[in-house]
Length: 176
Image 1 (cartoon, rainbow, N blue to C red):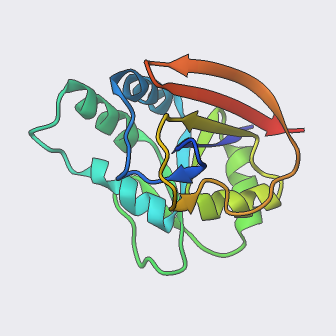
Image 2: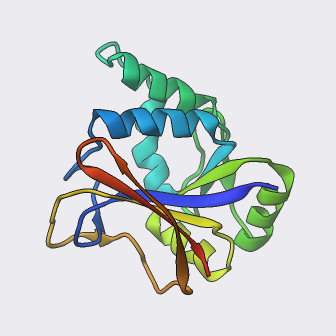
C-alpha cells in the first residue's frame, strides 16, 4: 500500500512561495533523489501548473535540472481539478469522489506518492489520508503569502529532523 506524503518548502514564518525562495544545490539534489524514488505525484491544479514546467526540456538546464526533469516526467501524476479540461504527459485528471479515488490510489500502488498543493493537502488531511508531512524550512521571512497549512490538522508527532545543505531543515511529522 502506498503512503501519501505532503512536503513543501516553507519560510520561517510559515509561507510557501516558489518565486520568493528556492532550494540551494544540496536540497535540489535531495529532491532529485526523492523524486526518482517516488511512486507518483498527486497534485492540485495550481501546483500541477507550477510543476508542469518540467515537462518541456530546456537546452539551458544544467545536469541536475535535467536529472530532476527526467525523474519527474517518468512518474505517473494524478491531478485533482474541477477546471482543467486536460493534463499533460503521464498525467491523469481526477474528478469525482476524492476520498474514493485516493484510497484506490493508495491501495493500488506501493511506495510514496507525493502530495502537492496546500488546498489539496488540507482536504486530504481532513480525510485522514496523509501519512506524513515534510516541512523544508528555509531561513527566509516573507511576512505574507500563502500559508503552508490551509486549515487545522489533527495532532502530529515528530518523526525526524535533518539538516540539508547549508540552510534548510527537513522536519517530518505523522498524524499522532
